Image (cartoon, rainbow, N blue to C red; front, side):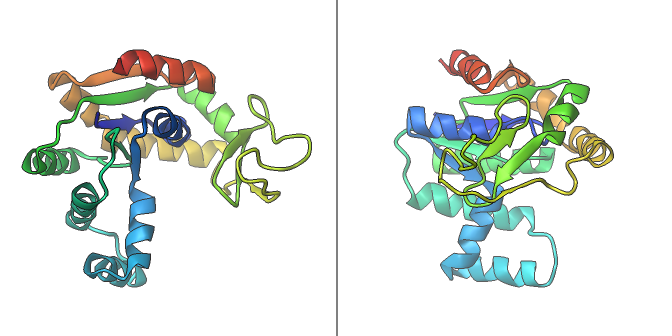
Length: 214
């Protein structure tokens, strides 16, 4: 099964993707992770990524598609793939669709994590991230363990993003809706959109996603 996970900043896309990886043996293709991996690889595409990033330029859609192609052709995942953070625009959605068709892959579902903006801002303003592994904690719903150690890696360094505040978050949300909301109609028209309530607790959202995919 191959799916896309859509949702605004802080909706919990990464957390739910990790659950799918564990439960269904899927591979998570996160744009940021793939770019970092490509840069470290020393491959031809990796050198291109390094040059672009060192100049301070944005990596083009074409480069991202080339990286995805390389992963799909070489990595093999028994459970399929989760596209996290890509596509974000209609042009990217078209490019990804053409790539999947070219490689003989099918897009089975697009999980849209729907949220209430005010509730999302309250949630994100209370979150901390483990500097070691990226695990996310929340003062209200999932506090840092009493022993001060990350449940995933045992790390003790927890950080809050400087832009996890009301004004910055609403600016990021507006950018998301302007850029990505057209994808909702795009994938609805293709019959693959699967909306879920992104503001339930982690287990509740995971269960909705299970029902949407099964």
